[in-house]
Image 1 (cartoon, helix red, strand yellow):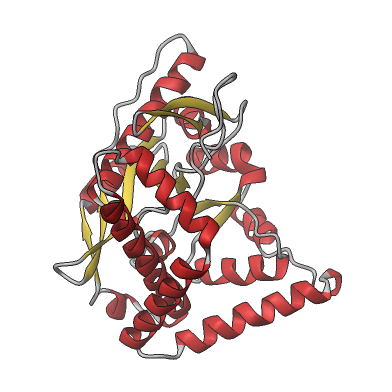
Image 2 (spheres, helix red, strand yellow):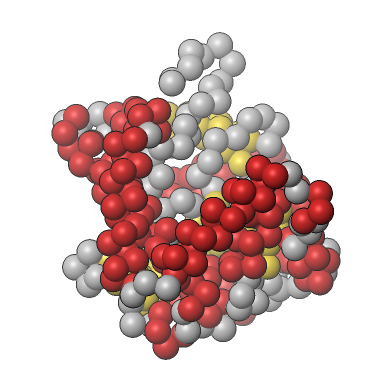
Length: 318
């Protein structure tokens, strides 16, 4: 699929077909983005943190899921320690909300005041191979800001995104994401879009930390518990020879800055057994994600029911 085709797909939203509820939701989202976006950044982040505080206290079901996940991942921590982590998660999500609202106003110079690279050479070396780059990432740190900043600095990339239920909001959000050359590869275009992008030597980021169901997912260990994980990235990398590079935009509390960290390209297993390779390499990707999450537990989206899908015969976790 060409970039023009991808752009046409991502902007598909027929206002005439939208329902009254969809229009109402769109107006609310647009008003929030505009209202927070015009504020000074420090004030916007303070407001975002306050919204995060309200969400922590008001969304009981999500808070319960987050605490359950933290209990599974960190059984040695006390309940108060796990709650403290989750409170910071909501604060950081509030910060991310503020950053997203302000993204349309960011320039490279302005963003450079509070974002820096670490390991950009790893990404550039992988790109020089000429077979495309798959950025292994997840809902860790400021994931919306990461690809935006990368494009702002002259490295536009594709993003594998699930379509939002409201097509008006989906198109609005994607326009912001793609202001500086980024493009959206929707999950329903996953295989075809990624293969085309890798053959063109492009870069695509994939969020690899969400619950899946077979056959799209395979079970691999995540914090010592089998988790159904998307194997598509491993299959595309094997088919195209694309480099797989970990990449995360993480908040450095001491610096009061975000750091866009790229790791070295991963060494993938490639044998005569493609199915075994898919599982082995998916396990590798998941282990890398776990390592980053363990280092920055207060920046991962613990409220997602990551272990919802269970192996046959195993009881549900939630």
